[in-house]
Length: 106
Image 1 (cartoon, helix red, strand yellow):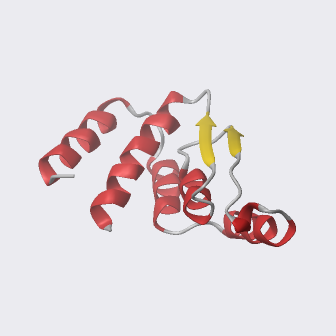
Image 2 (cartoon, helix red, strand yellow; image 1 turned 135 degrees about the horizontal axis):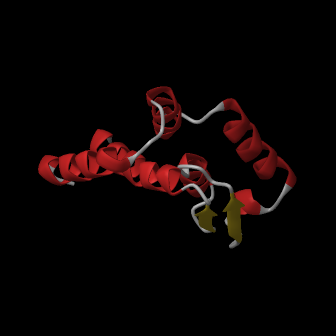
């Protein structure tokens, strides 16, 4: 994504997000590296289910927040479909910002 498009998304979202700075940082950092419970869940699913064998599945994450964990799950299990929902529109918008950040960082 071009820098000007990324900046437009970031500035547009920042104008109406009401999350405190530390909350924003906490959620955005999860796009850079998964939290321990996310990696533990991925490891558990690989060991105790057929997901690690390329099985197809659908996963719904209720209360997904910004959705960073779904990104890590989708990388670990690319043949599965992941959908996240949350009642907090601010966190969902932050997820869009986090995805843009992730795409421009890699």
